[in-house]
Amino acid sequence: STVKLHKELFTEFPGAGDYAALKVHKRLSVGTGTVVDYHISPAREHDAPHLILDESWRKLGLLVDLGYASLKLLRDCKTYDVVFVIRLKDNWKPRVDRIHRGELTATFFPGADLDALLDDGTLLLDGRVLDATVTVGPPGQTVSCRLVGVPVLDSAYRFYLTNLPSTVGPHAVADIYR
Image (cartoon, rainbow, N blue to C red; front, side, top):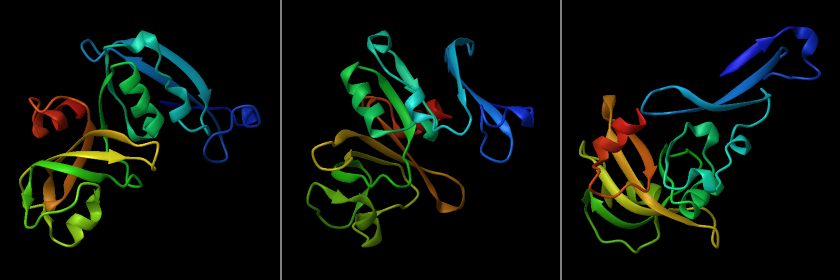
């Protein structure tokens, strides 16, 4: 949450515009919706550095908005056995290793670019869900995870990255995030 402050505090707490602001980073209990932890930062700072996973997160779950999403966060989830569901960031270019659910019109080599598979018609978004194993990140720093795509209005899709098992279907992953 962003809280606007008096303009006189701009030099100490710069906001995204010509105003002063603070950002409140809240950790909520999904089960009860109550705040279990928080901290405050200048509003102009990026969100991602303010979510640090450590041993206290082991075996917990994490739902974060795109402001907190980073490849480091995904690697830390693996390190601490944290289950996650996040939206796929536009600038992340997943490479597809395997399609579990989805309409393929041709074979492809593991590691193929998702956008290329969609552009050339090898993988069709035909109104049904997509479930795939993908890697994201630069060579040597990749993270393997599950990508699910769920159709939404106007033939568009919403894509999520998760490490939930395949027993949790794509629609359930989208519902969890929502």
